Image (cartoon, rainbow, N blue to C red; front, side, top):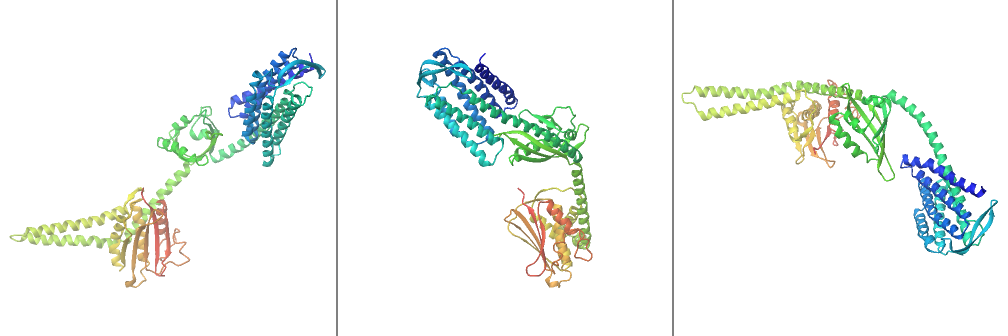
Amino acid sequence: MSAVTVLWSMIAAACLTLAAVHLPVWWRDREESTSLAFAVAAVCTALTACCELLALHAPTPQAYAAAIRAAHLPVTVLLISLVAFIHFYLRAGLLALAVTGIALRALSTPFAFLSGDTLNFREIHSLRTIEFLGDPVSIPVGVTNPWMLLSHVGILLVFVFLVDATLTVWRRGQRGIPLWVGFSVTLFVLLGLGHGVLLYWGGWQAPVLVSPFFLGVIAVMAYAMFRDLVNAKRLVTELRESEAQVATAAAAGNVGTFSRDLRRDEILASASWRELFGFSPSERLTHGAILERLHPGDRDAFESRVVSDSGQGGRYRSEYRVLLPDGRTRWILHHARLEFDAKGRAIRTHGASIDITSQKQAAEEMLRLRQDIAHVGRVSVMGQLASALAHEINQPLGAILRNAEAAALFIKHPSPDLDEISAIVEDIRKDDRRASDVIDRMRALLRRQPVEMMPLDLEHVLFDVVTLLRSDAAARRVRLDVDIGGRLPKVLGDRVQLQQVLLNLIINGMDALDAVPDDSRSIRVTASRTPRQVAEVCVSDTGRGIPPGDIDRIFDPFVSTKPEGIGMGLSISRTIVEAHSGRLWAENNADGAGASFHFTVPIAA
């Protein structure tokens, strides 16, 4: 067997072997475009080598022409796969140049069958035999086909594309394998193009040799793929070590990690993640199985949160409850990140789940304690208002008594005036309603009930509190004014808690007026809508103001400017306002007389 036959057979066998290795890689993961491009290029190189071997040993001009014509199609496909490999591997190069070059090459291919004997020769007169690698091989003697110039221009454009891609890699500062791949592939394509130009346009008497240059290209591509494989293996080893470290840290922090393939609906999860959701180590995980473990009240919210938040760079978070098989409920904090393919489609999700049940329980306990403290504060306020409320109730009760005595006297008259008695009864009804309203306001403030956010008429809330404090203000000789800036929209809040804030602020204001002369004692309550689309309430007094050193401390717990104060009223008030997504702050008045306390409440949608 000749050396040429052995070498060209080895080229074909090596290329087919490499294709057989990398084609299943692409078949397993369709995103591995470089593996597909490499496998196609290797197969085309093997076919080209077979056609060249037939041409080198062709006995007649007709056999030679048939072998060369058969090689044109795999060469064209090989150029396409080469451009695809460089495009996907280097992420560089003017793709329009390569597409134009391949189009010219493809356009010239039909002329291999329609114009003359081959695309290379318009007519092959005869074959000459020369010695190559110690073996006799055939070379054609004929007339060059001018349409071959179209093919060479196309290959030249592909060469320019490769040069541009290599220079782009250089400018990026990538001095390793990518630059070496770009340079080497460009060099082999240049050598192959130069060989063709000398052979067909320069009259060089040599056999047609395309596959050896393409073998060099395949070798460079194979080396790049091999280095990527080695790097991938090293990364896998490092990843396993990192996973072991992360698993240890996650187990210590009660954190579970997971990864979900969105296309296959397959979920890989750590042992701690499975334990959080109550799954066994061998149980198959799917999105549907996880949704079944979620609390029914959280499933829709979880799905909508994923859709609404995933647009923010692919990251989202949510909190939800998980119903475990043993009947327990567990709170989970879920952090995840979406991965997208080149077309912007979500393909994979990575994330972590954290058990926050204890934090939720602590928060609920804190909320209960805060409500208890707020309730105690309201009871304390009612204690301070006891005498004023007694006076408020005694007035209608005394009027009822006097009207009842008057009615009794009218009834004893031989001819009682029924119209007068009816008027007296109507007065008794009005006074009874007035006393009932006072008692209802007291009961509402003293009642211990959960926070209930709802749209409220802020004007009614203000006037209810002012009406409740009117008697106490009169007893302290304080003028209490209310100023509503136009029609106020409804706000979102809890009526009782907002009333408590107003009670605390107005009573604090009246306490600040104890050392002020009677004719200067006044408190002004204003409410208005601000440009920030919130309602703002201001309680302003004419006292001596807040000492500059205390204005930043008065909202801290157990800090009070009053000798008999315990320092909880303003702290509770700020907590209530912040729970309403508002803000509470204080400032001394600009004229130096007194201080003002402001708080905001969101407007109800």
